[in-house]
Image (cartoon, rainbow, N blue to C red):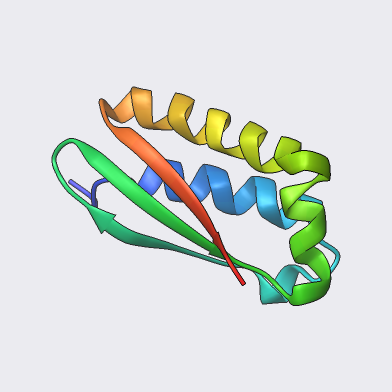
Length: 84
């Protein structure tokens, strides 16, 4: 089977790529994964980070919610960090 958390990574990568202007700058990595959880790190260009986080963190919160829904499909807990 593929690496744990791959579905979560792909979902987050797709969402972030659709939000930003510079799609080539998007980097989504699995920082760590175990049998129970997966941690995703998201990097974008500095100009696009504001779009990804959104006003008062609403977009970031929505991305985390969708990531957790994807993680539920794999029976995992997820966390998503946005790295400057």
